[in-house]
Structures are given as C-alpha cells and as structure tokens.
Image (cartoon, rainbow, N blue to C red):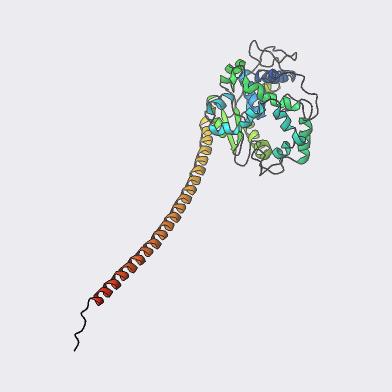
Length: 380
C-alpha cells in the first residue's frame, strides 16, 4: 500500500510568500480554531481517517486534534511537543525557566521590534548556532545560510511576526486564564487516545523537558516513546535518518486497513454539533471502520522505563557533579588545614625560641647576681 503524505503549514505567511493570513485578531489563532482547520483540510482532501505527524506547535495542535476528532485520527506521531494536560501537571521549576520566552512573547510591540532587528539577525543565531546557542540544532549543517535567508524573507513579510506570536497570545492567555486549555477543548484534552501514539524527544531539548512525558500512558495507553541521545528540540534536523527509521518501524507495527486509508471522506470526523472553521467545509457524519492492528505498540511500562532511565542518567550526572564538588571542598579544606598547621608550627617555633631566650636571660641574670655576692678574698 502506498501512503499519501501531505505537508500542511501552520496558519501564517509562508516561505512561499503567500498572502498574509486573512484572519484578523488573536482569537483566530486559538486552539479551537486551529484544530478545526486540520479537520477542514482532511475533509477537503476527501479522507475519512489520517495519520498525523507533527512537531513543536504542530505537535501541540495534533494532540488536541486527536482528542477532539477521535474518529478522524487513526495514528498520531508527535515530535518534541508535550500533551497539554501533562505539561501543566508536570511543570517544574526547570521547565518554567526554560519557558521564559513564553511570557516575553506576550509583551506588546517589543517582541516584534526585536525579532526583526538587524535584518532578523536572531534567525542566524538560532539556526546556525550549533555548539554556541543551546536552542540551535546540534548537528552542524542542519540548516544552511541560504535556508536562513528564506526564513528571513518569510518573517519579514508584513504581519508575519505578529501571526507567529499570536500562537502564544491565543493559547497562553485563554478565557480560562494563563496557561489554561481553551474551554471548548477541556473535554477533548482529557480524552484517552486509544490509538497508536509515537512520541520522539531529543535528549538535549533545551526548550521542553523530557519530564513532561511522565504519566503519558494515562492519556495514550498505546504510546511508544523514543529519546534520541544526540538530538536537540529539532529532532528532525539533528537526526533525520534515525527519525525516518523510527517512523517506518512504528507505521509498520501499527498498520491500517486499505479501506480506512483510501476511502473517500464523508466528513471531517468532528464530534456531533461541531463544524469546521467557517471555510464552507462542514461535518457530514463520520464513517470510520475498525483499525486492523497487526502488532501492539510498546507497552506503557516500556515508555515509562525510558523516562525513568533518562531521569536516572540525569541523577547520575548530578551525583557525579556533587562528588566532584565535594572533592573540591575537601581539597580546599585540606589546603586550609595545612596552611593553619604550618602557621601554628611557625608560631610554636617562635614561642619556643622566645621562651628559650627568656630562660637564657634569666640564667644569665642569676649567674651575674651570684658572682656579685661572692665574698672578697682576705688581704694578707
């Protein structure tokens, strides 16, 4: 069976210099609208069910799509993007520190000015900063200067930066408050995903901690988790060959029937009462057949074991660092003790010398007095 692969860009001005998004206002970038967009695209393609593969913001949207349109998503692969509820539940001080730019992006005007400053020079630091910038891909050559120029041209299109920042404004500050899911999606995000799910993470992801995946088996019981040891947040750029192998194996282990894969779509797979995003594509009823799964996905225990193994490695690194620090403290203490001992010894020698001198002075005085008191010899 031949798989059809469709690449869909997120809502904003594209690298192909397409017109700026016709949507106006931050609300248009809410997760409720973005998930409906995906359903509308699937319907427009004439599909009933699809396999979603997404990274970063695309991954965040894909988690919500799978929960909101369960009849439409047959398999889900997410690269470097945590499930919304797990992110909120597992957030740590370390993750909060890594996400500092979230709040910075919420400031008015200033982010747009700085991102476009000096011909959008930050893009060079981001994409060409291997070994220097912790947010950059780790593999040298993952992005080239001509690639960066394409990104610059896209970002400098009128309204493009604002569109990109709208993702943060619309999802971080919802009607429910800061960092709270959109009210329309709470039920969808709480739904267990009883489909094959693949999660791929870079061990050196500086934006999102691996600990965001703790208890992932509670939202996706059939999850398979891979941690790429040499990859950053940009797993597809740092380890493209390895990622392709992982995807191929996962797809082979979780096949779908030809009828499901090739049947004409009768709907976008939305739940009753839901519609698309106003593009004219409306729900016409979901027609889904049962998936023929030839091999089960790795158990949740294996996924949890990989998370635990990563935590164990981190703990070992911390312990090793603590051991080195302790050795340094001991070395400093020993040096200080030796210094104090040497000073004490010098002082003791000086005291002993002073005491000896005092004794000699007293003895000399005694001899002198004794000599003076001797009787004079009698004269003849």
